[in-house]
Length: 249
Image 1 (cartoon, rainbow, N blue to C red):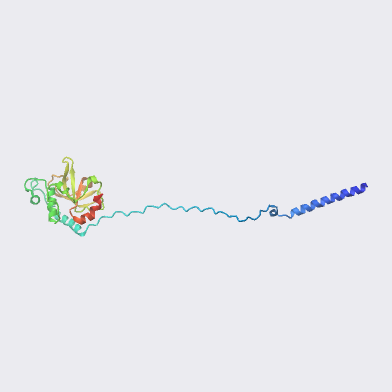
Image 2 (cartoon, rainbow, N blue to C red):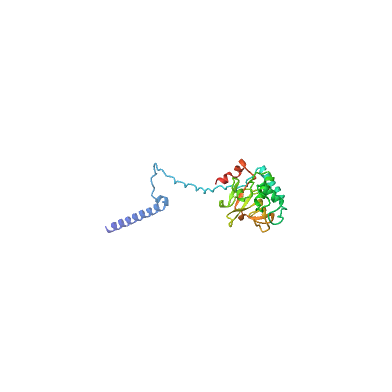
């Protein structure tokens, strides 16, 4: 009896060992993928696309504005400026004979302005009146400087700020202000300019630039010394075409 029981135990042990070995062999044949739980196939799944960011637009730069160009004067105006230059040439030799505002050209200019030529009047404006008249250009027939800057031909006064360099000042007249007199008291004809100066021709002055001089001279005047500008080389519609927009500001 004991022998039978012993045999059964041995049989059971062998059976268990066989089952364990079979289980180990089966498990060794499975892949990693087989071990992962499988998900059922998704049905009717809608995937939302991630919105693409809007492209960044570069900041718009303002379009460069063309630099202001010098105003082109009509040919007639250029001829007038040249005529004034040539007319002023006749005065370049004028020097007072006795230092009392006396010379045949001064007398002629004073007479043109309706004044006696032997009274010793200041003659800078009278000279400009004669120069313009000889050149055939309409301008004040006045020996008073202020009269030249009390007309519609005035294009600039110092209170307006700097005079734009787009305008050609050749042929203009400039007025110089004297604080002790409280008015414009000297006039010059502008025949050229650079960045800081006007090149002028003017009467009743001297090498020092006085308004009570001894003759007619070519001078260099700082632009800061000029307080007003008037252009008699141009008038009417041409004047408005050149200066209209500027003067309306």
